[in-house]
Amino acid sequence: MILERILPFARKLLQLALQEGDIAIDATIGNGHDTVLLAKLVGETGHVFGFDIQDLAIQNTIERLNNEKLAKQVTVVQKSHSAVKEVLPTHLHGKVKAAIFNLGYLPGSDKSIVTVPASTISAIQQILEIMAPEGIIVVVIYHGHDGGDVEKDALMNFVQKIPQDLAHVLTYRFLNQANNPPFIVAIEKRG
Image 1 (cartoon, rainbow, N blue to C red):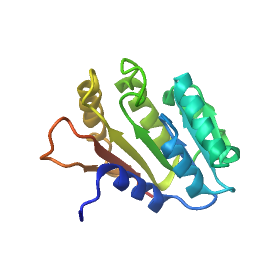
Image 2 (cartoon, rainbow, N blue to C red):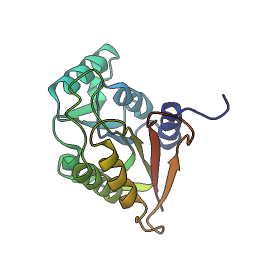
Image 3 (cartoon, rainbow, N blue to C red):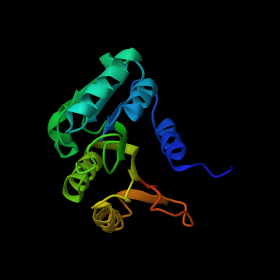
Image 4 (cartoon, one colour):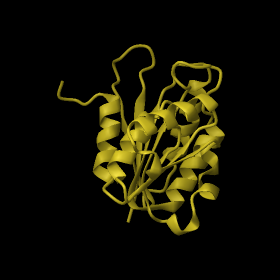
C-alpha cells in the first residue's frame, strides 16, 4: 500500500518533528506504545511527559518503559492532559516539539472511561501555547464508541477555528472505510 495507514502516518509525523534532546508530550499514554516511541526519539538528553488518569495505563506504561530501559527520560503523570501547563516546568515552555493524543478509551479496559471534549480541547490549547515554533500536535481520533462522535465533532469545530497565522491544521483519513475508522488531525505551530 502506498498510502500510509493511520498509526504509521502518526508515527512518521512524530519522527519528522523530534530529534535527540527534544521535549515531547504523550497526552494519553494508554498502554505506553507512543510513550516508548517518543522516549526513543528524544533520546537520553531529551524528555517526555506522559499523562493518563487510569492506574492501569500508568502501570502498563511504566512497565513498558522499564523493559525498554527508557524510564529515566520520561515523567509519567496520573492526571488529565488538561493539567499539562501546570505539570511542565516553566523553563520548558516554548520548547515542546511534539505531542500525541489517542482519543477514546484504553484498549483492553473499561470502555466507559473515555477522553472528553473539554479536557482534550483545553490540553491542545495549552500545548499549542507552550509549543516551539514548527512543533506538531498529532491527534488520533477514535470515535466509534459511545460519546466518540461528540468529542470528534467538538474537536473538529475547535481545530477549524484555529487562526491560520497560528498553526497549520491537517486532516488525514480514509473516506471509504466502514465502522468509524480512526483518523488524524495534525496541528503544526507556525514560526
